[in-house]
Length: 268
Image (cartoon, rainbow, N blue to C red):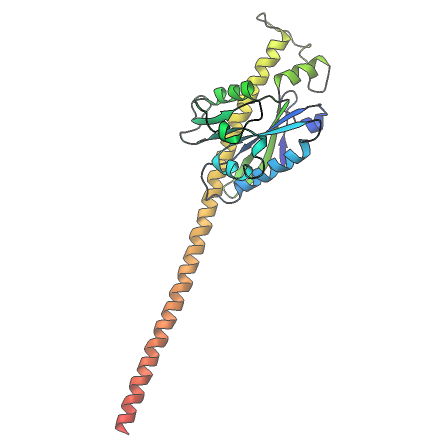
């Protein structure tokens, strides 16, 4: 599994030693199948992260993107699902105009049926990120997706984003995340406001990157899976054709032998 980092905001908190209590795992999957094991890989990593981060003093929830991830995680983690979003690729994906459907959002523990009762259309990835920030409480948000390598290869990746509050707390405490004290801030904004804006914008960019990478990996995996299926179907057709021809030839040969034997018997 690959982990992406950067110096200030985009970091893996296990490596930085940042103390977090509320973890949210964003599992990005596809809405359609026939793309190999790309969705199963994301779900397996999400479950592993959930086991690592869940504990008596910590909370760990799921935000699921895509029907296939929902179908797998709903079996054993229904109570831990905070948000479900489907129809990711209904329209072309870009930062300002993507098609999302958000199904349910709640901070409290509610029944999943009640969670599915409400739906809200979100038209932009930036609005999606804002919706998660407003409706899901988290200290660290781990985005699980597949990074595109080639048409036949993808790399399971985890990107960790800290909440604006944690970023501000660590900055004020002089933690490893970094500080804005060495920078001159213009425009009348405070350091807290700058960190809040940076964290929110960075989160939306990371989300957009993860969705695009996973979409590319999905299409590549689907092309590879369908190519293998076509090749296997062709091989099966060749084997069946060969079996049919052999059976037909054996039947013709048997009939000819019977005819010749009968003719020989009449002449004799």
